[in-house]
Length: 159
Image (cartoon, rainbow, N blue to C red; front, side, top):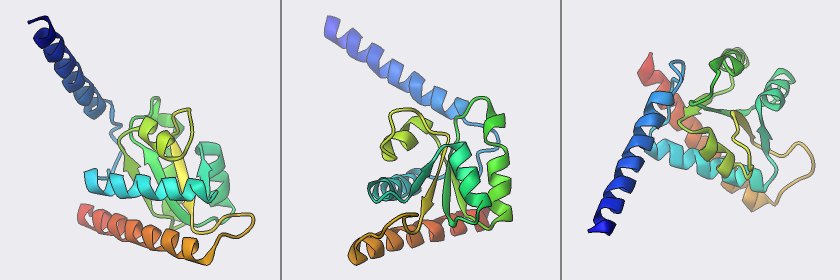
């Protein structure tokens, strides 16, 4: 019986964590990626991190966008205080860079091979320095195009 109550407690704890995640989302976190798009986005971030086509953190992302860097901006929706990232979507819209919110900064950091939680990342189509193999470039580009199409579809359904 002791194990049943422990299992129930852990299940309640997990339910509580799920509820906290939903509550902790910022009110400006729109368009928010669904489960399927989140999975695709994190897969793209993982591939981009492997090939060094990733800018991590607000300062790096903003600097890259201002310098004309093109890519997909992925922003965490559970940032506190929200003022840290409120200017990023506006900057993305002005520069015509597609952006999407994901629910968790921890998951975003894990996908980007970072130990610390990350507010936002910018996935570039090609690395700033050096080159990657042609076939790897094509795989990255196809995943990138698919996520961009999904973001465009989600954004168009919002407005």
